[in-house]
Length: 251
Image (cartoon, rainbow, N blue to C red):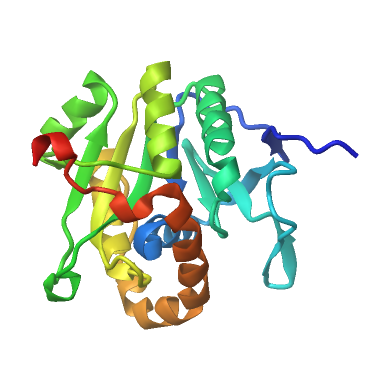
């Protein structure tokens, strides 16, 4: 049987929302995106409306409450859509997944796409409340940064799935605002995830409680320890060790 190198988004129920807000949480630095996205799903009681399917993906399922889930899922609550991955994105599938997600966001006429991620800092242990930096793809996203007095990531290099998503959004003219919280490089960081959720509350006018997330921080760290190791192993081939370093031309 010939393998398919494309990614298909399969809708399990019709997704017909006017100008949805689209959040993206993937395993990455500090698992910030996955932890924050999982907390939002639980807090808003979001429902699965779609999943991603491809022969590029490993044969993996996820079990929650004895129920089988696809590891790459899209949730919905009101006018919010959220893409959550509970396994690292395979390096060979990075660009294909990015193209599928950004095309789908165009098809759904998303008003904004917000990737949620971590940015590694060596002194994270000394930081009580991590700062959140932003990357914008157009004037609309830049206006949000100014309106809400957010911090910009001024210089650096990004690699991996989020870099591909930002590039696709730039090419397609999609309003994309990436949120990058200061994070432990190789440890699950619920505190950084909480900082991301606070910015989401501010920008999107939501009221997601971060108290429960911080209270369960140690439990989350234990549960996601193995995923953090698998994610770290996958990030190396994508050049993540060089991510956020200042480009040589500026040094």
